[in-house]
Length: 527
Image (cartoon, rainbow, N blue to C red; front, side, top):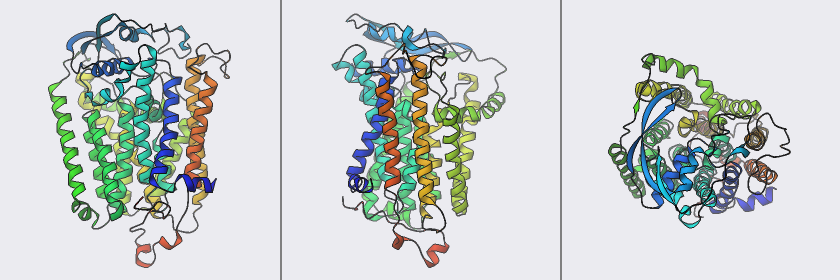
């Protein structure tokens, strides 16, 4: 296994290809094993993607009566002209959504039709960049096949972003610890959204890349690696910002924490690089384009929020829901109607907390401030956001909205630990083995639980036999694919663990608990 891992991870390109294949297998498993319409608001995003691919960047505004979280209102949706199949999408899940005891077999078959009708979508105001990237397969394949291909395109984009994050993590001196941080940030919910047509998927994956690439630029400066790190950071930032305006806040958070943790002189070295200014220009241009699009497409919805829902009331309710949002960040599937096994939540959250506490044990004052600041942000950002929008939108927050920022906690914790991994007496290898494989088993269990809900319902047989609904290829195939990919990803973290004793800091550098670190010799800088 060690020799195989060495061959697979000898160069960044090979490591990227292997990581891409594994993350694609995970995301594609969700894509195929989830019924069409069985993820949050996917019908709206599928309609938007198909319309953008057909050149309908903007549709005419249509006010649609709707109710969300018990609040009535008229939502401003965009009307576009598409095949009737997309109109049928809206009600395809009506017989089982929010009823987790029912399987998806009651859903009607989506029939392909050349008849075009007016279809409305609540996603018509969103930036068209993501939808153009995933919507084009609908021009090549009609019917349900085109819908699944759009999902797979989204999985490809997310897998590419996450694989780039793994390569960034592998450039630390003890690469397995930062790679563990990437593994912990790719929660079952992140992978579930990666396999759906929903901008949350690439938004979360881009957040993982922005944190993974941004921190080593200033915490572990390496002139030979700076250009490629800046490229990864720039790509992650542009994707993050182009998804929705909140991306500017998530990217700013990653930059602020990287500046807080920087080594002396690291920022000065970055500012001397021409590539840094080129990428900064591209990021600014993407930001301006995103803000212009957002300001030109305001939300004209009219929501009748109750007078009792004041900003203070919303803030209190949101604070009380903190643990609910944490659970949703780990994974609550379907239309927030399918929880994973309790062990998945406990183990995943427990490992992230353990990594944070371990980092605090080794952290310098600025690093303590960063870890504590991230924890405060995870709790308080939803509180502030809900308080500000309660009067116009009501209580709409979900845990996945915060994931592009929250992924910074395990990534920061593991890179702080990686800077201290030369210290004797700490069983790092055992920590990696236990954490990595626990996360992989918890991940596979979440997938099986979600699949069981769709095949037989949550009250159906545990072994899913007889399966009332089955994905293409049968459910056993995708359970095997997902489980193997999750285990191999954990194995990749464990077997590539190594420490170069000669690189351990000594003397004053050791007393300062860190300093500059070089990447593994196994990944040459000029590869």
